[in-house]
Image (cartoon, rainbow, N blue to C red; front, side):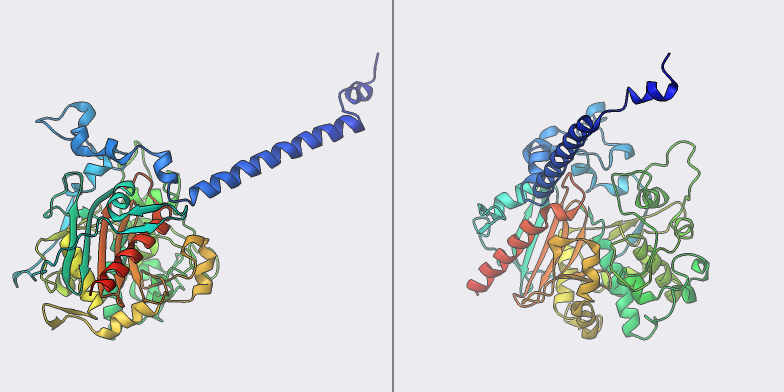
Amino acid sequence: MLSRTAELNNHIPGHKERNAIVRRYICRMMEVVFVAIIIGILLSSDVFAQWKTQPPEKSDPVILRIMEGFPPPPDKTVTREKLFRFPAQRWAFRHMREFQATANVRRGNDGVEPLPYALKDLDSITFDTDTKQKINIFDWQKITYTDALLVLHDGKIVYEKYQIGMKPQEPHMLFSMTKSFTGLLATILIDEGRLDPNAFVSKYVPELKDTAWGDATVQQTLDMTAGVKYREDYADYNSEVAQHMIAAGMIVMPPNYSGPKTIYEFLRTLKKEGEHGANFHYKTCHADVIGWVLNRVTGKSLAELLSERIWNKIGAEEDAYYTVDAISTPAAGTTFNATLRDIGRFGEAIRRGGVAKGKRIFSRAVVEEIGKGADREKFKASGMTQRYGYSYHNQWWIAHDKDGTFEAKGVHGQHIHINPAAKMVIVKLSSHPISSTIYTHNIDRKAFAALARSLRDNE
């Protein structure tokens, strides 16, 4: 009888066999790496999102007859559980207040600021994509799942188009463009001396003393360089951002859920990770911390503050709104909803350096502070290579290009693009099936640049 050792040795490959196994393993790993590289290239291309998802025309809620009928058929009904499912989201992003409690942002009684029309045929303007194929403005809107597009030039509407049944009076979900409204309010209070950017957050919100923000400054939080353990991974329901959305009421609370049930409660669970001020990492939780700070400094809710300082001063046509959590707290980083033209009025007030309806509503220094941006070396740590050269400052994306453009951005394709040199403001509202704006960043920037060139050439 063989010994146990000899028996085992009979099952151990010899030298040549081991080498063959290693070679096969290395070859297999090289294949995996090669496939990963190819996928990475595809992920960065303009057309990948369209290849991966349904053609835009097959997701049009009007064609699909989503939410038609009284009641609509079960397979055409949008429920809270379907808000972020494609193609239901193409209807839902214009109807968020029908699914969740909201806080109104009043437009006031001072009258609407007219936006004169000087319409131009911009649909046929062409530009090169990353693949060197030409595309025009009309088709660009289609393949990026645009719901509405507004182009202002020197305060006049030169282009306005609504798709998939969206109406001018309908507020659209802005997602992370909300952060830029929050950042503007914070910058105004800093300019007025009411908020110290170098103070620790815990000075204003003692409840955060034992969290990541206990020794983080307001400025580090505004610029998202404060270190916090928080994953911005929408595909993982165990990630912090998913827990954040549950607490904010955006995602239906799972059965037997025992986690935080409000935004304030959620923020108190987050701990420090890394060094404050070292590098930029995009994390939505910072915006809600700033929202809490604004509440404490002003003694007002975010909805009341935005109405008072901005919305009732820009001559808005419609009230706007935030969706709120279980204790009526707006999510300062994700849940603002407004109409296309009113967002255009907001962007135009910033382009004019704080002037709306012929009156100064905040200091020019506020816009100059935002526009100067932050440390671009710290931005590189984010890994957002498609936004090479950018920085992130006071909750705005700063391009540092020759035209001095800066932007508010939101998932699924929301944009405010401000080009001071071209006297242009673009608002793009979308319902792209892929949440990250990185998928369409390059093609969107090329479209914005093409529109700027055309408007300059025809002045």
